[in-house]
Image 1 (cartoon, rainbow, N blue to C red):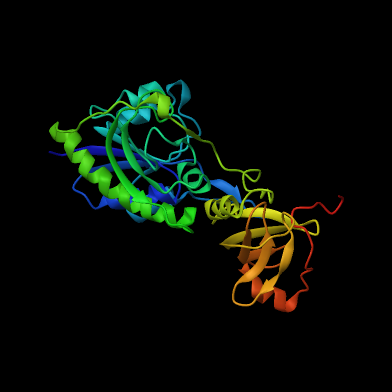
Image 2 (cartoon, one colour; image 1 turned 90 degrees about the horizontal axis):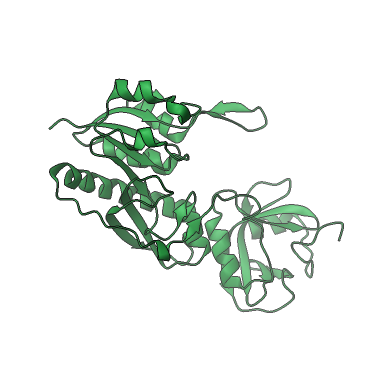
Length: 315
């Protein structure tokens, strides 16, 4: 049976799912992605990861500014997909799209639904110290990640696993789960399980405020924030009023005032006290410098023992 699939997605996670889907017998008739966005000082337009992957696979790309008011309906009817696959597209779909394909709109969501509905399930799973996460394949309805779950796969989260590392693993897991689930949908053997709304949690978008370190929190909590914010936007604080990004850290036992620099420890990093416990800051980026090992930075720059991270220069 020839099945025509329209894919919708935007970031690297979605591009990896699209790549897996492209290796099946299903016909991918197009890829819908967010419009290119300006980045960097030159504000050069940068294509989305899905656009780049689709072009590599010779799949037609569509980047509508909006789908509201049935603005994409003519294009949708021209494509006539039997199924729409959505993976981190970034916008809620209007009803005329959700209702169109005979096999439904199928979403690949990087959490164990109903936990972590929303835009940033991977980051929040890490930040909140979850020990496991996974991928849910869901038949979309009109709510935010509220549809019936058709397939689910679990995986543990490592103690120091970053969001970036978890993104890669979940994309691979999600692609495989999606392919097996599509087969069940088509042959009528798929089971549709309603979510328990009473157990839902929400994973809002990540921003720079999310990334700010509160040094009064425990070393365990701050460690998870650092992992969750890696690779972007990176956990952030200040050193003598200038920005400091932290990409990797390791928990240890030490005491001092929250945010206090206790010294540089050989082969460990920059030792900083937290509300309880302490952290060795290992991979950092001080203002005006590149990301590097904290010990390497300390060899060429004086780092003041006793200084408190997170204190504004005007304080």
